[in-house]
Length: 182
Image: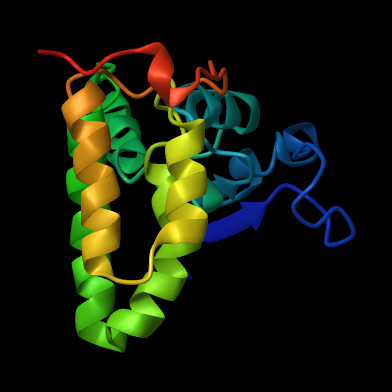
């Protein structure tokens, strides 16, 4: 065995509740292989906290990585160097969203891929201020790749260089509240 991964929630908890890291706090000391912990890893600070509380060697990112692929890079950089990387820009998130879209289209065909992207693509801009209406449009109003491109390009024009806010706070404004940059 090369490692052990433990999800710190019970089956009854499912996707709700808080992982019980205290229940596995001494597990790494009793093992000769690395302990990898999982559960509610949505931010770099979540990963640091989980490793600190459990003594684990690493974390496994699951739902927290959906729409936030850069989280893995942030965790890796911090674990290797102690350096915190800035959150990605809206433009970067859009680029990664389109890479995933194109990979899914290649693998599953456009109709199936776009159906899947209706639930995944909004997560790529979920930390983007003033994007609530855009997320709704993506989730309910895309029928093909071009529909998604059109919405994402509109978002990119309006706020592409802004940094994504991954700390869970959201600020909602109607789309008309801010004119696009000139």
